[in-house]
Length: 150
Image (cartoon, rainbow, N blue to C red; front, side):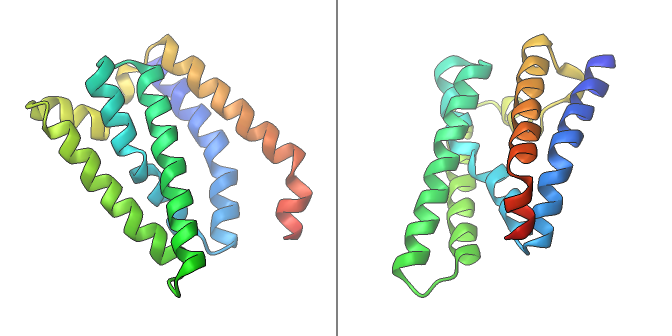
């Protein structure tokens, strides 16, 4: 139970300021879209290495970056706005991720990959959460003024 509390605290401390900036810039869809867009990479990492944290994290980062770049390219080349392009790509990405995980043949595994279990956090996940939270807060501290002024 303590690990769950520490993990949720780390997520809330790092995620709240980002959420505030996204809401103030009218980009609230971005956070939700990116949470769904990482699914295919995490699914491929899961199929290749099981519940390996590094494999799922790197896969998710790769597909999240690919979705952002693709949505930006479509928004630049067509008349479609950035939020609409991001919505299209994140929905395609989520559907692809669920399909990839479903190919494994176990609905229980799909449920755990999609929703997780906060009570199942181990030390490796807590270290990852601490690192990501520290990097996020450090970035916000360094670039606070440009983020506020923009």
